[in-house]
Image 1 (cartoon, rainbow, N blue to C red):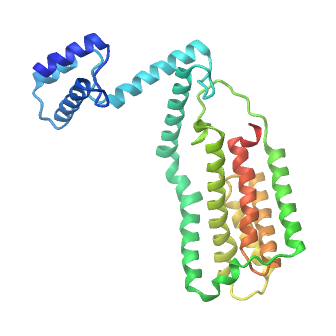
Image 2: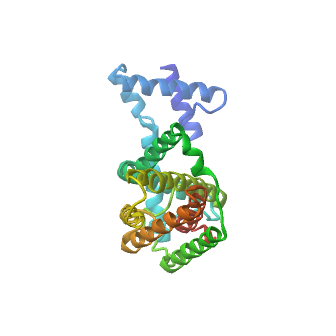
Image 3: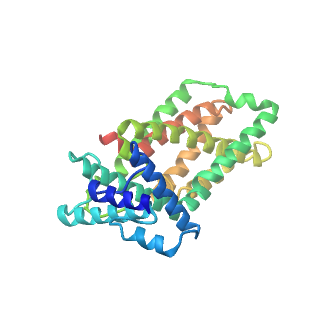
Length: 302
């Protein structure tokens, strides 16, 4: 009861509940309050004690849940007042904080609702396939040959042409994005941390995706075919499947699948003219991913 009275006094004078991160007596009182919540959660608190705590203004059993509802009310008020969603680059610190919270909710929605499917088709399978193929190459003695960067003027010209083609595709298929002021789930993870963080994300994602996909599609799956007979037919088959795998990828849709299939076929050609090396096709794929993923993040329009 002494701690309870101290809690009531703190709330009346400070206008808030004590935090463990506070200083001195506030930290002690905040720790006591956390223990009371824990007792209640474990069913060890008498009903009369729970009733007394619930009489304190602003008290909630789950602070995170209570804070979420507070943020929701702030967002609702902002939408009614401004007629748009909060922006990261706003002058007012409160709007920036609210924009970061909205982004976090979008991210949680992505993780809960869409991540299993995304991980299954676009990340998990290429990652596991690339890792297994890399292990297989380490066991297989000639693995060193595929990492020797054989080059020629044709390889260099092909790299430049593919990079220009990817850039042209991104330019032609990108439309200016107009803000509708609605709560569409369109903000990508990392954007709230600024351009440098997004550039780092794009580079890491591009390196990872390019390495895994090339080891999977242009090395591992090609080994399913015995010998080199009907080489063009093998390339066409793998390129068609590679294009179909991008139905929900980047690029996506019918046009994206066609472009990805053509890109995969060109990667087969570049690997052939570079005498089986995967270095250059990984480099080309990395450049393409930087352009495509960077276009999704909008780093070229900052």
